Image (cartoon, rainbow, N blue to C red):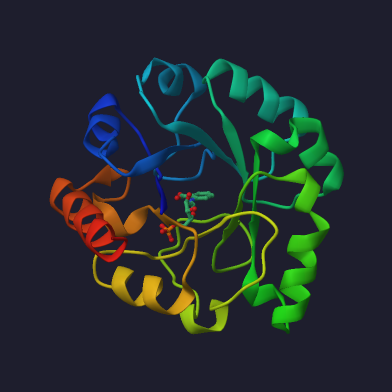
Length: 206
Ligand SMILES: O=C(O)c1ccccc1N[C@@H]1O[C@H](COP(=O)(O)O)[C@@H](O)[C@H]1O
């Protein structure tokens, strides 16, 4: 199971979330987010053995590449409008676009969209809503069961210890992206929720 925990705002939050089984830590570069972080601060946060993911909403390829360099990022999560050219400029191995199941009237249309980006991304992420993120709103998990994706896909949107079991059983993603559902307050991770979520995932992933 590919587990990503997003919204790192300090070394303490990264230390809390860098636990066995966590593969990605996310840093949000979106000024209006309560989880926004500046590139130098993200750079100063030490991580080990995890992929460092930057979350971007409306930045240009140049801005994204500059921030990736400044903050020592491995992957760009494209949570705004993206196209083939943007993905190609960043490089397929470093791209995780956010796809929006609710914007598609059929499952086939979502799968076609995923297929279109097959050579342009390393992972795909599926979230609720139409742009941005961190809204804490979940997708309809059962509608995603058996989804055909050319790359491993992560489920995002309102995941918390309360709904992880249902999400895994119904959507059956390759990975999970946890964010506001593990917070004590916006931008501040709750150690109890983080431990609880990771132990649920470990138990269900055996
Ligand atoms: O969390 C944010 O503030 C945010 C802002 C702008 C773009 C993306 C953001 N977060 C991402 O949204 C999803 C789902 O988050 P949640 O579980 O619903 O809180 C996740 O991928 C975050 O990386």
